[in-house]
Image (cartoon, rainbow, N blue to C red; front, side, top):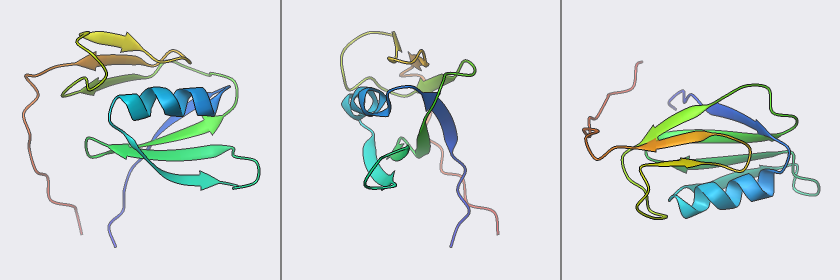
Length: 98
């Protein structure tokens, strides 16, 4: 089993935030607890995002290789995550550490 890092994004409305990132090409992987979701885990672009319900505590910026939701070079998520898109990002496979 590989150890995987996650980017934690704290936001007041995790469903709105999830819908934004799904439009960009991320996929929903986990919801917990199921009866009253407080955390959603999304994956995409070899990245895991952990959306946690709460008050926004800081700025987050992500750089992604493509925008599947449109043609903008930049977007801002509902809770203020700055997204930058760059076709110049090279695809590089990094082998996991043991």
